[in-house]
Length: 232
Figure 1 (cartoon, rainbow, N blue to C red):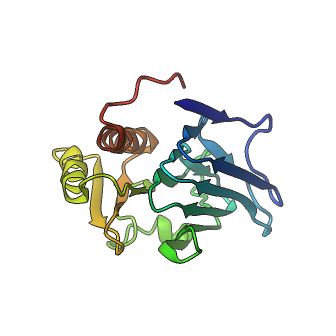
Figure 2: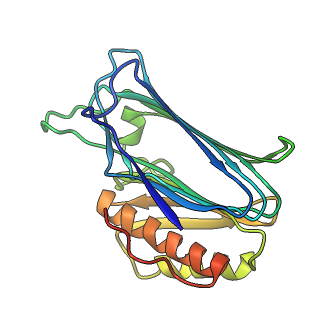
């Protein structure tokens, strides 16, 4: 199974930057895509930076799209979009996560974070639409129902038509038990062949651990064995 690391020679995302990734998984293909590290998003000066991923997963394909968390610097504005078109027999695991970082300790916070995850079937019918539109001040407010005391937010979506989703759901939930550094919820998707997990973590390290646990479980259920270790 191929592992692909997307890399950038710049110091992160800047105002008016637009990055786009297109992934075409032909029938039977298997691939994991990740980043070399977290992506820093710099001050936007009112014009957002944006990144978009477009994925097509053909018959019996397996795609894992697993970027590390975006780190939102004070004054940054990020628009993130992931769009997936998936065959009825394909499987996919994808995550999207971010955290705020006040690098100079002056109380600064990011301007805004907008995120869209859109999965559709091969004919374009929506399967999952997940949106986030959040200001930095809301993020750090500490309010119950937004972030509380947690610093990192993540979403993990799995579609796996060949597995027992109820069993995978319980395995996901069990992986979060007895971990006070995260708060997580796992729900079945409306179409009945996938799961959505929402995770709040104390920091990016705990978020990456949680995402890795879900990746291992999804691979084990889909192909029958755990993934080998990958260098990062």
